[in-house]
Amino acid sequence: MTWKIWALGANGNGQLAIGHRNDVDQPTSCLFDQPPPTSFRPRKIVAGGNHTILLHEDGTAYAAGMNDDGRCGLPPTPEPITTFRRVMFNIDGQYGEAGEYVSRFVDITATWSSTTFVAADPITHGQAIYSCGTGDYGELGQGADVPISMTPKLVLYLGQQTCVNLASSFRHIVLILKNGDVFGWGNGRKAQLSANIPCPPPNRPSGSIWDPRLITHLQCRETAVRGYHLACGRDFTYMLPPEDSERGDNPEGMSCLLGLDTKKDDKYGIKEKALTGPCKELRANWNTLHAVDGEGVLHSLGRNDKGQILPARLKGNILHNIKAGSEHSVAQIAAPGTLRNGKPAHPRDSPEQCVVLWGWGEHGNCGPLKILHI
Image (tube, rainbow, N blue to C red; front, side, top):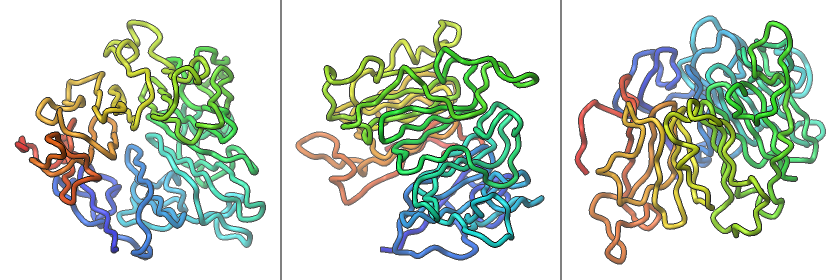
């Protein structure tokens, strides 16, 4: 099978990798400087404010968009990168020097202005975490004296311990390790990295964490750790156990929402109404939460001034492969009218499938600004 990648939406810095810097509201084929093998399907795509990183199944990564601070993991460029380029960097963070290069990755995530890579170390074959770009609130995780990293630098060496889940939002990052430990760094002012935040160094924002910090009261069960769902909103972090977990087996707090501790902080009612049981999928916009329960029903709650909550006309469908941007979301559904046992079919059961988008669409993020009746 030949895989192609299509993009639409805001593109002022070339972050769609379509060869120019104009917004588009129609799916447009992405371009590569050197196309990846067509036999490998894309495994993960993450987007910052003005850059995009793509991870392929073979572990190769590609980047496009703003890169004046090196946030793409590529040598800094004054002009945006408008086609996907493969990411490779020296393990000491210095480009152009002899040495071992990191060229295969296990996971990726992006904040507004930085990227975090989980890489397979070419020398020890253990895992190591690198970051690059701008992190005014500690989201680089490289220490309080590093708000900008023009080249990828080491954040945390995991050795033979491995990262099984990684998520981020506007200015904070959270990861879960195979042994069940949970680490976080970046902006924690709203308790999204736990309530017990150390005092930041002088001249740094309050609530900021500049090095990976163990969130001591969270511990996943090793037997289910790979299934734990993790989602980061702008001011919260949410973790839910996998669908096959029994409530009684979960340690206290593992259906856990960090942040939004006060009524003022939780002004959209996310913490008050969030799903607490095991789920199939969990995603977050900046101020909206989407969770798919065991019956396949999507629960959307939070801010809705730009249509971030699932529209009523889509309710009743089974949504699958949900992804969330800052204020808009995309999901896969079975083609309209497709039924199974008299009920809307699951996308995986239907040869005909559709993609639906909803939420903020000013820059073409959700396609043409007109209502599509399905």
